[in-house]
Length: 507
Image (cartoon, rainbow, N blue to C red; front, side):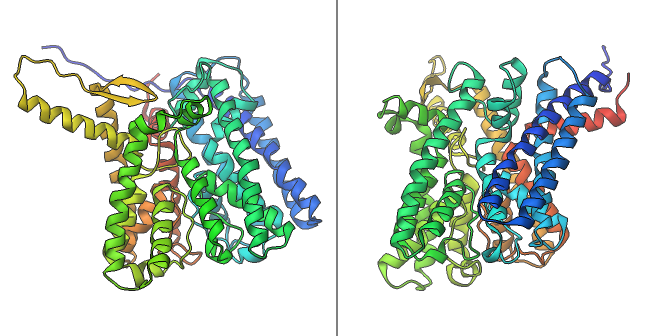
C-alpha cells in the first residue's frame, strides 16, 4: 500500500515580488484614473473636491510606485500569481477609490465609502450615499466612472494601457471571470472591449441627453446625467445622480433607452464582435441569447402573476411598465428602478419578489458586464439534461453527441457541464450565506433573499435593507458577496490558498 504525503509549499520571495509588482502597476493606473474626476472638478469650479482628488491621487500613485519599486521583477506571472493579482486589484481599487468619496462628507464612515466603491466596481448599485442629490458633480461622476471601469474590468484596463501581451496577461484576464478571446491576442481583445464601450458611450449619452432635454432638464444637467446614466446602464450597474433613481425623471423615453442599454450591456462582448462584423444570424442561433430570452419570459410570467394577484396596478400600461422594467433591470443585473425600495415588499408580495429574485440570480451573459450565474451555464445544463434523457431512450451501443452553438458550433463535453454545475452551486451557496446573515438581523426570508441575491449577483435593487444605518456586519457581508460574485470565486479561492500556504506552508 502506497501512502501519499501532501505538503503545502510556502510561497517564495519571488512569488510575492511578482504579485506586488503587478499590483503596484494596477494601483498606479487607478491613481491616473482620478485625473478624470479632477478635470470634472475644475470644469465645474469645485475647489474642495479638486483638492480631495489631488490628495487621493497622490496617495494612490505613491502606494503604486512603492509597490512596483520595492517588488520590481522582470518575471511574467504564473497562473496563481495572475489570479491573486486579479483578486487583490479589486480590493486595492475599493480602498483607494473610497478616499475621495470619504473626504466628500457624504459618507458616515470610511467603511460606507468602501461599500460604495466596491458596489461601483462590481457594477452592483447598492448605495450608502447620504444626500446624493446635492453631491458635487466630480464626486458623482467618480461614482459612475467606477462602474464604467468595473464593467469592462479593472484588469481589462490594465491590459489595454499598462501591460504588453504575455501569457500572464491572459491568466489575469481569466482571473477576472472572463475566458473568451474575442480576438487572437488578449490585449487586442481588451482594446476591442473598450472600443465597443466608447462607441456606445457616445451614442447612448447623446440619446439620453436628447430625452432629458425633451423631458424638461436643462441642457447641461441633461448632458451630465446622460453620461452618468449611460455608464451605469451599459455596465449593468445601477447608480444614478439622483436619490430616486430612474423614478426621478418620470420620463418614458428614458426607460426605453436605458432598457436598450441594459440589453447591450448584458450580452457577450464576443457576440458584439460577431454582430459588428456583419453576422446578424448569430443572434437567432446563439444558445446564450435563446436561453436569456426564455429566462426573461419565465421570470416575467412568475413576477407578473404575483403582482397581478395583488391588484396594485389596475391599468395595463402602468402595470407592464413597472413590472417589466424592474424585471428586465434585475435580470440584466443593472438595478435601475422606477419604484421606491419598500414598494417591492408592500405592493409586490412574496411571489412577485420571488420572480424578481430568481431573475437576479440568473443574470445575463458570459463575458459581459453582468454578474450572477449567467444564462450560458443554464443553457449548458439544459443541454446536458436532454443528453442524459436521450441516453436512456436509445440502445446502449449507440453513440450520442450533443452539440450547442455559442459563436461557433461546439460539442458538449463533461468539463463544460462540470464547470457550469460548480459555478451554479457556488452562487447558490453565496446567495444562501448572505440570506442567512440578513435573516439573523430580523428580516423576512423574502427580504433577506432579495437583498442577498441583489448583492451577490451584482444587481443593486433593494427592498429597503441596504441603508447607512444597517449593521456593519451586513455591510461587510454584502461587500464580500459583491467581490466574490463579480470575480466568480476562482481568483478569490487562489488568493485564499496563498494565505494558507503563507501561514502553514513548508519550505
